Amino acid sequence: MQKFDFWLGRLTGGDTTLNLALQVFLVVSLVAIGNFLLRRLLDRLAARTAQTANPWDEALVNAARRPLPLLAWIVGLSFAARIVQGEADAALFDAIDPLRTIGVIACLTWFLVRLIGNMQGAIVQRQIDRGEGVDRTTVDAIGKLLRVSVLITAVLVGLQSLGFSISGVLAFGGIGGIAVGFAAKDLLANFFGGLMVYLDRPFAVGDWIRSPDKELEGTVEDIGWRLTRIRTFDKRPLYVPNSIFTQIAVENPSRMSHRRIKEHIGVRYDDMAAVDGIVAGIRRMLQEHPEIEQSQTMIVNLDAFGPSSVDILVYTFTRTTVWVDYHVIKQDILLRIAAIVAAHGAEIAFPTRTLHLLAETPPAAA
Image 1 (tube, rainbow, N blue to C red):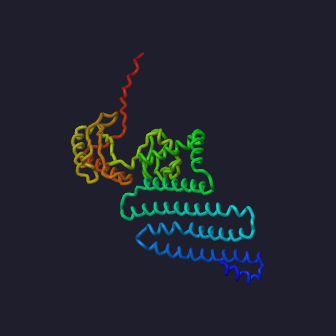
Image 2 (image 1 turned 135 degrees about the horizontal axis):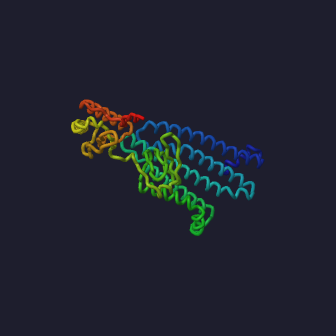
Image 3 (image 1 turned 90 degrees about the vertical axis):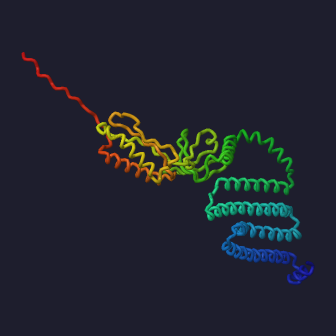
């Protein structure tokens, strides 16, 4: 280092200011060159890891692509500032060490948060590639808990590095938590509501849910700590505070095992003699239908004498739970029932009304 200063002195002719500027210029130039080479290296590593079957190395490299160059700049510029501090004794330079420490902690925190997000995406993608059921809700919950833990730890370490007492900060947090709890009770209610959703798992991302207590129906897109985003069937986003889910009943049709067909088929009273054969034909058709679940309840019986028809109850379950496929199967069942009714020489009734007209009596002769 002394030889380096000697040659710099010879080069600048002993001018201290020029010597100092040259040292700072060399340090900044080396940092810029090193940062450029570091970026090129990370780009090459990212391109190479993207071609491998292991997603973890790709997640690690992508997480470091932005924080690592920033960390190089922070360390390099702090070193340049220390060089200037050796010649200029100003109080401003006393902030170099705390700022460098905070910068390093921030870069490390940024790296860990990005790494958690990349690992979260890699786990979901790996489950999709393997054809396994994607438990996105659990993965999101664990990822959010890890990110919150990293951020809290970074804040505490940063405060400790700046000379604050962690025990004092925690004690203040315990006292101030009471006031904060009263001021932000709705926020805390939503937080614990989200926690209950993660633990009880009444629904997950991608499920179709609805509530008989609220006008709430749609597909769950995201479960956050404060609110849940639901996409309604007319494609509007619906943002529901999580505390609502602790107060209402939630129905999850996505988890049904079968879909039910429940219809009343009305036959004319004039076709009463054919009802027994129609009932037997419908039951036989349902028992032979490949899309009807035979292990579930099946009812085909005369149910009631309606105002203008003899009503036959058809009650059965399909194998599929897919909404679109269910309607295709239901249409096929109804068309087959109509064919069975017609095959027995009967007709499906429609609302009728019978009027009895009284014959008019001639007026009496005067």
